[in-house]
Length: 235
Image 1 (cartoon, helix red, strand yellow):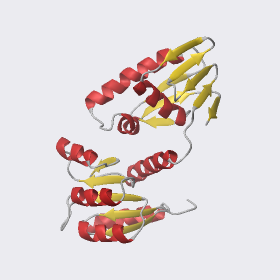
Image 2 (cartoon, helix red, strand yellow; image 1 turned 90 degrees about the vertical axis):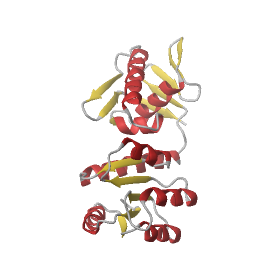
Image 3 (cartoon, helix red, strand yellow; image 1 turned 90 degrees about the horizontal axis):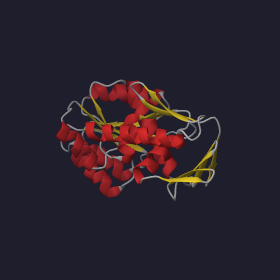
Image 4 (cartoon, helix red, strand yellow; image 1 turned 30 degrees about the vertical axis):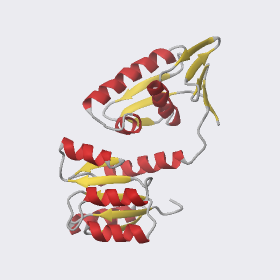
């Protein structure tokens, strides 16, 4: 990384907090550790952070209360909750507060960094000009009109189909993580939304069959990959 990302890390288990901080620093992040919610809030109020990693159960101020305070100051900064809990109500509460992700302890350090990088890429992409059209082989995908055109045949896509295809195009020939797509489009990652996304993937496959060089592959345990030999982006 040319410019180090500044990470606010709030974790009351000091040994784990130090381990995470050292790992992030080794990966090129500028991470600061705070052992309770109040000190974390004071740091956020006086500093500039690119991401917050918040333990849910902390003394003085828990992670949910801290997230509310952070959101009141900055509605855009990414938040990942770190917690030993895996209860549905806690997960929903986290996402209602605007969390970008939720990682249950014990977790892999590599997985934490991967999730952080995926979120930071998505946030960075929001600040960039939106692609108006993707030209994929014989197909033209108009993201604004939500249409897929090949020759004289034009197909009108639903909003969900268009959003999902946009994500696939933005990650063309790379793995689009399943959980990332769910949270970006359906907000909450649960069984019913996951099944709904599978239905939309099937619909998109049918639309894309017009050009046999383009396909959506399942990547077992991870997500989907849009295979596109040639793509042109028009802003």
